Image 1 (tube, rainbow, N blue to C red):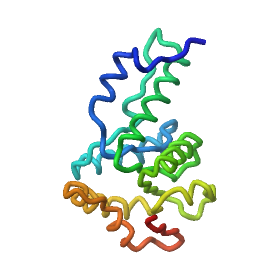
Image 2 (cartoon, one colour; image 1 turned 90 degrees about the vertical axis):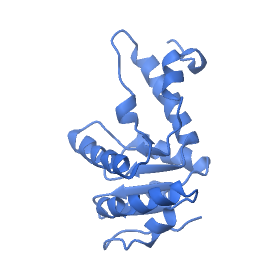
Image 3 (cartoon, one colour; image 1 turned 120 degrees about the vertical axis):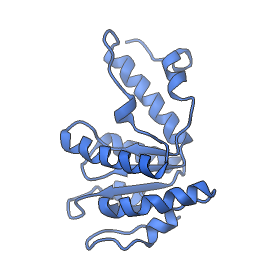
Image 4 (cartoon, one colour; image 1 turned 60 degrees about the vertical axis):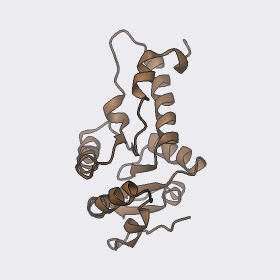
Length: 176
């Protein structure tokens, strides 16, 4: 197995030229996963927040081994989690990759916000406790505009989302 060396990859250099404001974590392996992520990507664009979405940026190319692609994805995701201002995670579907991304962001003390469309579904306790706020997808759409305004003013606007009333059955986190 060849080891991936990020310092020698011209493609990696292009991909990390500009740090994004938001790291968008979530599974993208089934149509329902992708539909939810696309909706949030559109909302982020509409309010003017730049974001990094592995769904959009990580692609298999002909002639490149899966090992190289996996190593490249790992290094790119680490870089963008470390350089973002917050991690926004889809928790509607169980996914070990999203759990890892949240854990890494927790270790780096990055702000973490999660959303779900199914609050009654069993969610791993460690994943739920990792996010500062867990909200419904609809409340996320409402809160992203305020979040973007506060970020533009140099403040982190998670406070606004904390003030949104969660739907029944939702856990509401606290700022650390």
